[in-house]
Image (cartoon, rainbow, N blue to C red; front, side):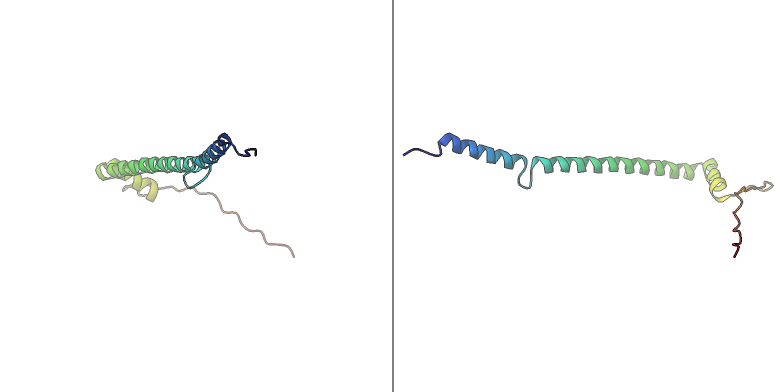
Length: 103
């Protein structure tokens, strides 16, 4: 009788199946690990961006707390405050008038 499956063939098949599951199968595949790393990098970039924004806001708050000039500039620009004797001019675009429709 002739052997159909040799030990080398069985070992090669087993190694091929094991390599497949190591790369693409299961919960911890190479593809899922790469996706997890990409998500981690995106989250870390978002954290860096938010920390930078927080630092900027803290610096702005500190400036407003300790600098009368910065506080005055904010009051003038955002809220239109003026000093006694000053005039405030606001320039705006004219509003378009609706034309009556001809019937």
